[in-house]
Length: 302
Ligand code: UDP
Image 1: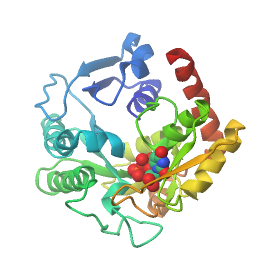
Image 2: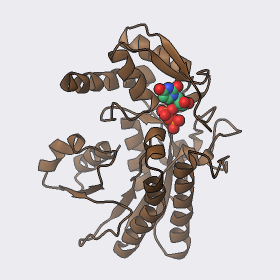
Image 3: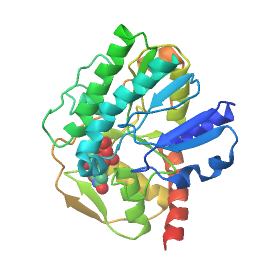
């Protein structure tokens, strides 16, 4: 997400300072940007104090592991990125008088009892479950962002990002899109967790970036859902991946991870009305681009 967002902002003529500790991100994704005169990269852990000397118009806090596998491998770092990291990023925005944006997540809705999920739903999160290191960190991040808006005068906004995919994802990040494509490329069976009837809705990265940029300059506080409302069961999704790749895969069924949400689909009425935004890229089209990217990565690593 970060590299795509940097490219988009640079293409609009902005100066961009990107900070990342490269725990789950990769310099490879911004290699070509490093030569741009208006781009500056700083290796920084968001959970440590952030020093930046020059003025800033906007601070966008997107730092956190986002794949369940990653955040369960790095539970304390994930909690710190959402809590200390949000505090540091908000402090920076306050000091600069900058617009602030928090990248929150559909995970604040937990394993929801309502579908689709709109922004008024408070969620059903297990505070001590394995996903809580991410979910509760993001819920805290929303709370502190709101407090800085109400009490500290920061022009702060919140977006809630639903499942997003596209080029530049890590092949082994453990999420369903890279997993299925990688397994198909290697001729391995696809790993279906549970019975595969849980649902997700997948947004292509360019659509998401468009929504983010509209929200950034809208002046609205949110929270606003950003995602694609086309919902698929994981088995349906596996089928679409095979169709797009022109292959037939076997399945291996593995246990459903604890607290894995059974359904997830954004209600994007608010984003439509507020931002005039709507995803345009259909799943098959987005998957073709993503598969093409992963093929280049696999051929390099072989
Ligand atoms: N999933 C799966 N096989 C995989 C990876 C994930 O069946 O190899 C399922 C997972 O249990 C979840 C859905 O796919 O129901 C999406 O998982 P992902 O890790 O992409 O992100 P989540 O939406 O759970 O944050």
